[in-house]
Image 1: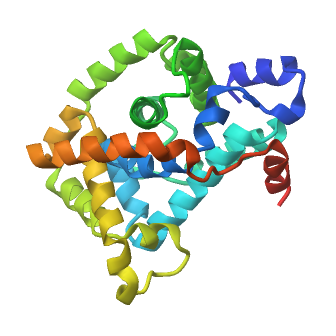
Image 2 (image 1 turned 180 degrees about the vertical axis):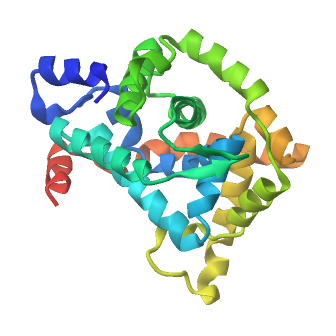
Length: 284
């Protein structure tokens, strides 16, 4: 367990509030279901690292494998953010054990998802996506230095040791800008992989069984929006690497749609609205 978590586990008084608790940015931000459209954004950015992509593509070869992985990641994230300390630590240990089983050779070297530089890249993609989602859609939830420190604890729960995480928002930006300029290598295989995921319906990802083709047209506008949203949100360097670009008209359309979502998101359904609901779900 990262040393930061050991200290927090020993010193935080309320076991049931977990590592964050009501009033934290992560509770306020993650309660909105609209955040789900940010998942594929993070996936695209994560795949732009060639070693990470090689590991991912070695075991996420089918829509079912991808769906199972997304479901598992959502479960881990739920317990990290909303769980009590024991639930969060159990999820952290389960995630580590799952990653320990994965090894894949890249250019003659055997790599693991637990390598610090790879874990930091994945964490950075998640943090960047969360921050951009916050800036575009959840402006009522503050995002500042205190917020970043919460995400550093989340990084600890994902298994990243304290010394590898940038200390401040500014130092993260320095790392991120450097990583985007040095770590992006997108092969044709990677481009094909990402484009194939765009061909999946959002319901193929979130339903446990394959979505009937006869009903697929109902969700086609949603699928098209998510594709455009991903391209709208990813860093320019990633968009260039994948040859993913929006026309001027598409960008203006997305800007208008996002303004509408910002206006209505406060009345959209939330994942969890009452603390007791969280406690009940944690015991299921």
